[in-house]
Length: 167
Image 1: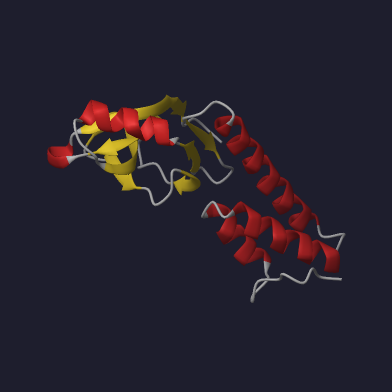
Image 2: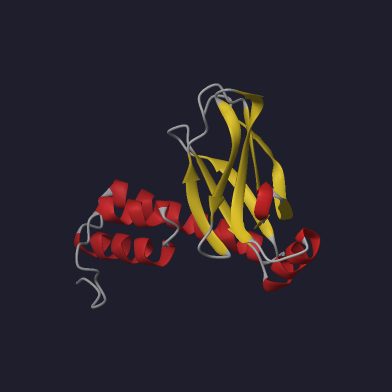
């Protein structure tokens, strides 16, 4: 029997969208409700397992304070998870010399016309999002930091570049 806190539309597609937006609790709820109705559906079980794996990844980051990590997904995209503490943001403000906007800075290598630096404004100090690396990129790196005027950037946390070989 479905749980009483069902979202208005409970489909595997909506669950996947929630997961890709970093709304892991909502995604897990939908997957569990759908599995209650069809416990033999391997796609639903796989989706719920993916949500749990991503939750575990965020727990890994959150246990160490500030952190960011990149992971390849089967279709060639990249999932980025991050966590920045209030202390990290305070350090970033000191380094920048003022407050700034919290951003995810994505850098693709080799640098060239198709591979550039991209700053993505973050609405939350903790979360997850999908990144589609530009064509021709061999590596992608990420940092979370504060962006000030004139594109000044103070990194709070960063990770080693991720190799983009075959998935």
